Image 1 (spheres, rainbow, N blue to C red):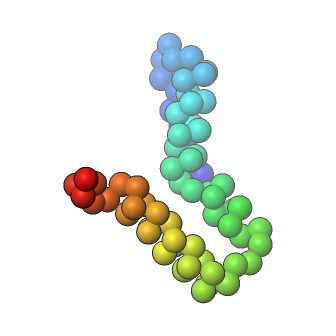
Image 2: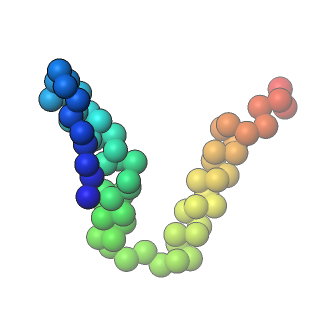
Length: 65
């Protein structure tokens, strides 16, 4: 359960924004969406590898030029 302490003279918008950030960091929604359909472990692992290759290509080793 998330607890957000609203400070004195703090607008409800700021408190709601803090709640949304905290909720996003917990990863509840991401986990819920991943459980909607079963995914084989081999396919999950393949997707992780493809994402890692993409990240490495985009952000890694930029000194080749």
